[in-house]
Image 1 (cartoon, rainbow, N blue to C red):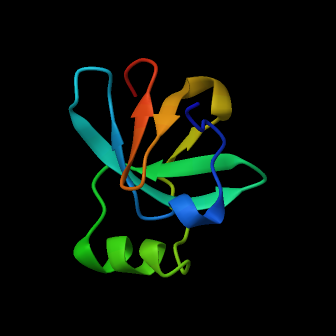
Image 2 (cartoon, helix red, strand yellow):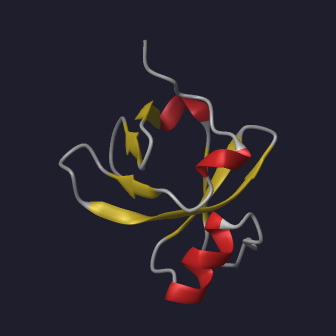
Length: 81
């Protein structure tokens, strides 16, 4: 069974639309809600993977209902972000 609830371990993962297009990375997870940075810098990506990510003004909130599945490396959306 696929997992759809985000945890802090998912920070830094790529987020993909239903067509496989990368739309950003998870930069922070708070209470099961993730925040997707659409165009993170390399520094932001590394910080997110280390759990040091910050939510910027351009980050989009992402809740469990928007997630189709979570793998070891990526978060797949039910639709488009």
